[in-house]
Length: 313
Length: 313
Image 1 (cartoon, rainbow over the protein chains, first blue to last red):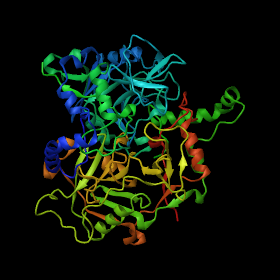
Image 2 (cartoon, rainbow over the protein chains, first blue to last red):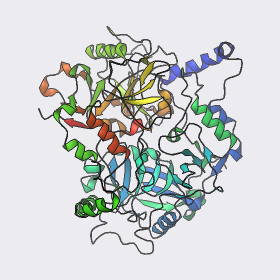
Image 3 (spheres, rainbow over the protein chains, first blue to last red):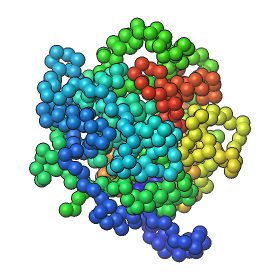
Image 4 (cartoon, chains in turn blue, cyan):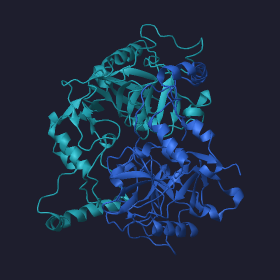
């Protein structure tokens, strides 16, 4: 999630950063009378504990794969019925032993019961198979919203609410979660009420914004994206794996609150309702790292990084 | 590259599409007196041979990996010096035996000579090690440009020129290639003239538009993206592989024109300067497939798919 450059090789960049410190005075003297704004790494180094929030174990899922753990934060403020239903599915161990059945390049990874449509398919006991879609919700001034200054191709307003990418339309009084990289959504059939959380997908490519308000988004991945994004692509239509042995088994999905503290992944997420976050957005609209010669002066919603760290408590 | 939905399972979708045909009359009768606009698959089915163009072998590279071939189209209209230099590097077999050294999640795959900074590094004989950056170019009314209707967060105008995503600024009289998924760029150090094509990267995530006009883009991948995007992510800083054995060897990079016709991959790309392409853009701004219940009414530059097919000639 942190700053990235395109160096030829790392050792050379290290050297150049050292040189940059030496010539910093000259750069400032010629470029501007004001000092350069801070870059993201400097902002994070200066952050206070109150700039961060710990994930709530009651709204954090662990998707356990052979390769490791994917940490997902749920978004009950936007999809309360689906979040409750997914927790109910977790509590009846519905997902354990299912599999990733679809990996479509530049689009989504999706897991499901491969036998869902057969008599041998996994039964749902207490949770619901389907729910009415939660594609948007009413605007609520009680929900924090840090609006981005550069607009959006799709929506009147975009920004972040508690770390989630959000769009808003004051005319219709609606707000909704946005399909950025790492967002988790509810697979469905053609009917809008045909999903319920038994099948979930994660965005692994360019933001598929055409899906906004067409599916229920329920959360986002904060750690372990590479365990999903680097999976072999399915060669069937829509990226489905064609052979059962290609599927990637899901060992388990667990609610963090159901594990002992020792078994949890203690992540902290940079808050998005702080002056520091506003400074971070500015540091990404105009990059003042030495490597950059042109500053974009703008940033898209899905291009804003939200820093994550392991809790030191 | 083609249409994708988020079904629970494929067999069910097939069934639903059949049902959709049966109820189509009712849908049309209630929704509108006009017929539904065509969807992308219908537009492609109705396309004429003149709606497609074959890749020019003189500007097509094959990146050969153990997993298969990545097909790259070069963009001499935007980076003539770099394209010429990359061809010179290909002709002296510079890339053969080098390796992918960096895979950073949601960002880039990059290849290079791992020993470039050591005495044992690969020598460049006839090509150049570095060139002045070709970060943008003058507007040229002779270059086709199909402008998109929905604007852009970063640039005054965006659209496609011969299949490449392009931004334009009439005020400064400049145009430049844009960092969409699959675009190929020239790695460089901090100095703008420190790259030359010996190290190249491919975008494998959300469009990193902050790189626009900071690096020279030289082409785009038309086939084989999944061979790059599914590689294991590097665990070092910036996604570099930490151990030499993790690197992914490059068997060779060849210019298509240097291979016999039998050894080439004969791709055809949908032209982007045709009425059909305009209809395709419209079919993606407002999705009329049965699955969609909300139509975005907008599309971002990097979300427009450019169809590719194997030549049947």
